[in-house]
Image 1 (cartoon, rainbow, N blue to C red):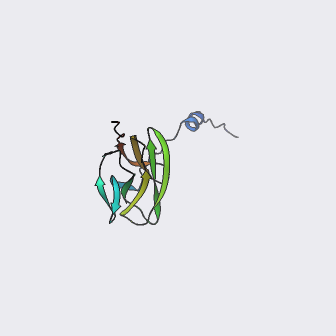
Image 2 (tube, one colour):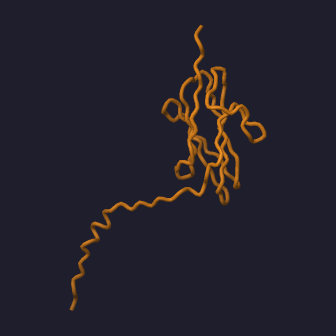
Length: 134
């Protein structure tokens, strides 16, 4: 004789979203915006740059890589993404950087560091000042 098996909770269980929240194994332990990179470090670090600035660099120290990995630097200007740079992370810790030409682009800038699957490792914001009209 067969007995019917009721799965009353199964539809509810299948419909429920499963949230798996895991942190990235990568960590951005240092982030700096500067005029240039010298000896794998920032020179003239700042959050506000004058109208004479040609380009800026964004330095990131990444820890937690096991084997070769990568991160993204996502550059945004006035709320819109303008450049996405894929950068290798070949050891732990590892310093990597990207450069962006900002000449004649005054306003609010933001750079976000993302791990390979898009999790944010940190954000840095800076401003380029407009030229003064005499």
